[in-house]
Image (tube, rainbow, N blue to C red; front, side, top):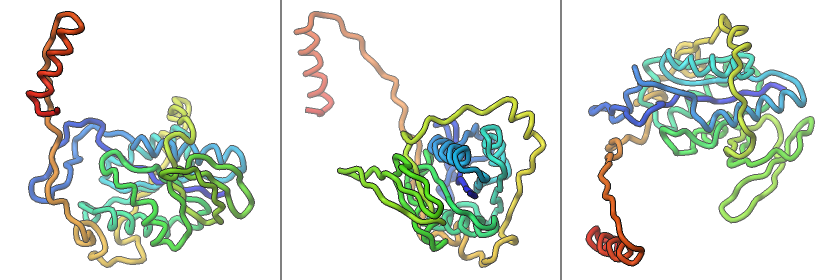
Length: 262
């Protein structure tokens, strides 16, 4: 089985600057890590490969330094990796991002199963996976908690719905977005790091795509724009109170009224 996992490099810190003109995060020079939710998707792919054989490939989109998360995926057991990197991709919203990655997927040959994390920690939209599937014209299921059964031409999964757990069967090729409780991700292997240190990270840009219409990518292809983005205010003020339980309860009640919480 040929499995593709979508991974993303996200800021590893909350201290990220915002471009005042475009309203997007300044990612250059910022400490980064693999999106935590993508680790669960990668672990799912590796376990399926252990069960039925095949290959696990990863794909990411970002600046050249995003190749580091692909190398991390190699250390966990991924076989191949592709990075979509082009200045024309910069500033993409979820729709343009989904279209860009779907174009990259088309350059990777036949894929039976695409796995994505539930969402990313820098966007939290949970839209890219399903939108990719729509662009690729394949069925998809989101919020997958468990893979019940793997068949030769389909799989049966449990979905975490708002009020119920539902079971569905989906035929290959398909796309799943997985919840963080599906498996416990393994740690990167130092032995694999040494074995894969020279493994290529294939780079693709707009010129490698079937559709090279620049209006479909980056800011040009984004129908939504961020009006304003800002880091959360940091408040470290604190008060220390001493007294009996009754006295502390009265102080807390007075404080909550002062702050207009009650």
